[in-house]
Amino acid sequence: MRLFSLRNEIAFVTGAGSGIGQGIAIGLAEAGADVALFDVPASKGLANTEAAVKEKGRHALVVTGDVVDGSSLTAAVDKTEQALGPLTLAVNCAGIANAAPAEDMPFEQWKRTIDVNLTGVFLSCQAEGRAMLGRKRGAIVNIASMSGSIVNRGLTQAHYNASKAGVIHLSKSLAMEWVDRGVRVNVISPGYTLTAMNKRPEVAEQLKVFAAETPMARIATVEEMVGPAIFLLSPAASFMTGVDLLVDGGFECW
Image (cartoon, rainbow, N blue to C red; front, side):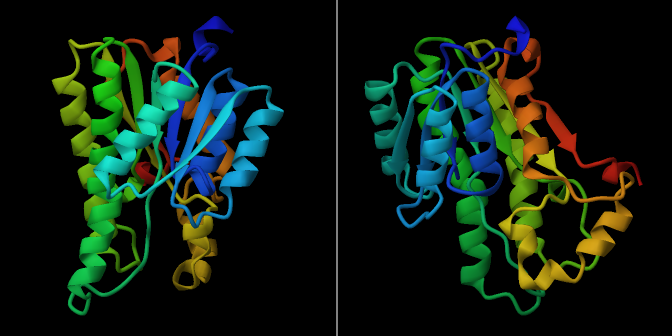
């Protein structure tokens, strides 16, 4: 359908080497976009993402760097535009998760999580926005979490929760700054999703509990985040900006 087509679009995806970022990058290609795949140089999954995008018949470009380094993001966006064309879409998925009681958490653990999950999203949006604003056309989706709105029972992750709450409000703030300049900014807040983060040892024993506490009584798959991302980036969402789209199996209703 035309409303959900991303044909002739150029997308930039951070965290494209694994998890939700990898799934969305491949989904954007299936919807018709050419995709630049950004992740840290050590990412082992980038080659797999690249191959999957090409299997969909679209162009793929691997660009590496760190989301906490604004200069590497600017260079990656520049390289994307040189190789694929003017940037029109972006999805910022890069993030980390870990757990520690707040009273014992080392400052470096707090800082690293905020740096990657929140500052990294800001720097990504900044580089992407600079490219889009001059042409007055673009759409950005940031991946937050339902943990940005609620506190997960049984998990000691004040740093992660705070970072994701920041992503939600940052996205709304950018959406309003850019609302009359042709660039939309929205958020997806996933519920419990079967990514590497939720295969961490500290949450492994709680997966069954997480599923039981979710009204739909299961954990989401990565693929279930792809459709919402395509929707928010597509012409179907042309009158949507500053939205925090919960994809949580009804979790927040309870």
